[in-house]
Amino acid sequence: MSLALKLVLSPLLVAQARATRRRALVLPEAEGPREGRLGPREGRAVRVLIAGDSSAAGVGVTHQRDAVAGHLVAALQNRLRRPVEWILRARSGLTTVQLHALLQAEPPSAVDVAVVVTGVNDVIDQVPSARAVQHRAAIADWLLDRGLARHVVFAPLPPIGRFPLLPQPLRLTVQRETPQYHGPLRLLTRPQRIEAGWWDEEGKGLALRDYFIARSETVGLVWIYRERPASPSDSEAQARWYLQGLYA
Image 1 (cartoon, rainbow, N blue to C red):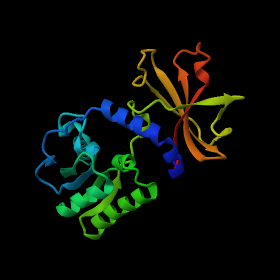
Image 2: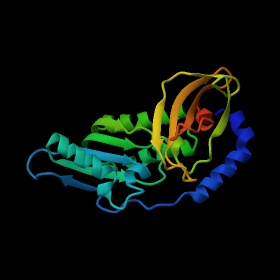
Image 3: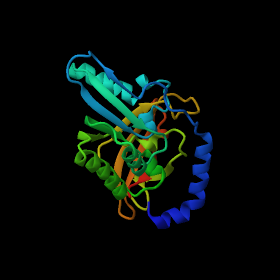
Image 4: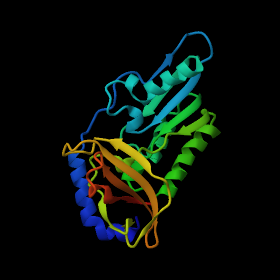
C-alpha cells in the first residue's frame, strides 16, 4: 500500500488496528526447556538452532514439546535416525533486526542448521518488504560468516491475511462475472482453496474461500478471494468477491 493511500485511510486503519489489539489475547510463551538432546547418547548429533519471534517461542501452546522446536526436533530425529541437539533463542514481539541483535548479544554455539522463524512483527511494524529481506540476509550472512551455522533456513511467513481477528475485507463489485477494483481485475493464478469454519462467526457452517492473485491496471497486483457457501443452493453468496490485500 502506498504512503499516500495509507495517509488517506489512516483514520480507518488506526481504528481497526486498535479494535484488533483489544480483541487479541496476550498469551505467554510456552514453558519447558529451551535446549536439549533427543535420541541416544552415543553417535554424533545433528545440531539445530531455532531462533525467532512468538511463533518460535511457542506462544499459543503450553509446553515447548508442542511448539515449533518440539515438533521440529522430533521430526528430524525420526527422519534421520540420529540424535539431535537443539537450542531455542526466541522472544515474543521481535522483528528480524531485533532477533539479530538478540543473537549477537549472546552468540549461540555452532550448529549444523539454523532455523529462523520471523517476519510477522516486520509486517506489524510496516518494515518495507525489500528491507525485511535485507535484514534476513544479514542474519544468514552473520551466522554463516562466523561459522555459527553450516546452513540457514527461513520459515515462510504465515498467512496473516487469514487471521480471524482482522477486520472484514473489502467486498468487491462484480460485472459480467469479473471482480472489480478500480476497474476489472485479471486473475493471474489458479485458485488456492481453503476450507474451514473458524471465520464463520454466525454459525452458518463450513466456509469455502478461493484465493487468487490478480492484476489491476490502476493499482497493480492485488490478493483477492471468492467466497462460496458449503451449500450450492445459495447462488447469491457464490458471487461474493473480497479484496484481501495489496502487494507493495
